[in-house]
Picture (tube, helix red, strand yellow):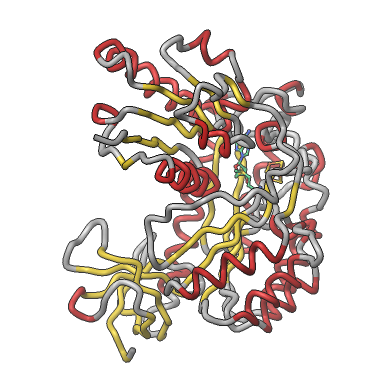
Length: 431
Ligand code: SAM
Ligand code: SF4
């Protein structure tokens, strides 16, 4: 019987997509997919270290593997991803039951998993990461993630990513075109271009140029991208978004704080008024665009006044949705060394105020869509109601419709009949 592997993925879409690459390599090595660690010959933890909570979650899962490893000593445990990169061989000190450590730039080494040359710890920088093509095993036949760049050069003072993912490297555009053409040929309907800061993409073209070329290839009706940095959101990118039919009318543009003082200490390289200008250009040139953001509550030195600036910013901008987090000190980062860290209870209060305010705004925004007709791409059965299908509008809002109306992969027009906090309901108007 062949060997089997189980991959436990923590964290962001970048990690989800890295796991698709690991699965692709392991399939080529003859591994099948195991349903649980207990059934697997190889267990990989693809980890996230963006906040302390994510790390704690991983370490408690890893702890649980100790007894399984005792029962099945031949099972191999690999720690991959951001914690692997951050900790290297220190992982063995925390967890002697781990066999291998693979950093974020060394996924390709998995192809040697069955060989005696497979390294116990591979966390070295890989200058060829952007040109190395890896096999990818995608789960979904409709929507695909595509890496367009690796790493980050921005060094926001709170963020561990530049240390765990290395320096920015853009993939050659012809590799991206080839991947997108193949996906279009295989019936994919939507792609999401991935990078920590996609709008600083640069090869023989810049990011707006890449979008223009991908739109011109045809075959993919919906192009999305994450994440954009406000400082690199150019007029040309806004123009490209407004002109290109396949580029969806949604942008995730992390603000982080409504206080320019805090933004400066975060090393974000824009002020709040710079950010407002970008929002007004986006809304003027792309009517109906949905804008979502990330906010950090309780950055070191954040005063009540700074926090109220963030509250005011949320009221003024009225984002379609936000992800908000309590500031979490991270290794290597400048902010972790700053004075005047905010008390945990104050961070929690500020985060709650932010989330409660935004819930009301999101609900109002969703209510305003009732009665409108939206194009949605059906993604599959609803997770909460097996009689319903869910899909997304071009502006990335989740819509559920009765199951009898359609099927996964269809692009249909629906009239929005009801709004909820996190989703909409609709009925089919035509296909
Ligand atoms: N590159 C993207 C950007 O600049 O927005 C995304 C980076 S990160 C994976 C996603 C979000 O996590 C950030 O936008 C930020 O709000 C949050 N984040 C990063 N480091 C954090 C920290 N130390 N504490 C709390 N939130 C953090
Ligand atoms: Fe982290 Fe800033 Fe880079 Fe985003 S842009 S990954 S927040 S350092």
